[in-house]
Length: 208
Image (tube, rainbow, N blue to C red):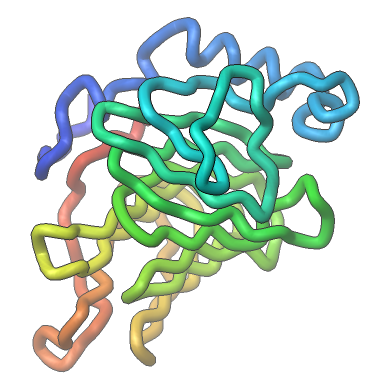
């Protein structure tokens, strides 16, 4: 188990992925053909849905499908795990984000995180990004964790758990190539003259 520092996140929340039913559901969904097949067969691409989740301003109900272009918000003690194309997302509690459309309805080009946290895994590909108020990450195919720290003035935390990511924050740029954790802060105000600064591993694990 990877060492991680919890900052406002519970152990149960971080270790959600260990539940056998969640992993089985994700594997079955991918094996069945992913989002295009799910839509054709009127099946959901939601792997796990717990608590109070809003989809485009309406309370989400079982068997709904998340599509590109949708706005998602989770309440306290809530979470949503879903898949689009070759990407998977775990939206943590008290989070708001938008999944923006790629070249087709079935590909996500941009994940815009407004508050809270999300774990994301992307298969190989180009022209995918994660955007927060203080940083932009260009995704090539990787697993990442992103969180906006409301108790730290809105600075963004981004961890490239594995893969290659093009990082940018207010003109500061870096290419992150990682086979383990490589994390950054996207600062609201510069620290030591930099808006993109090194960060520790917090609130997630490699296994996740």
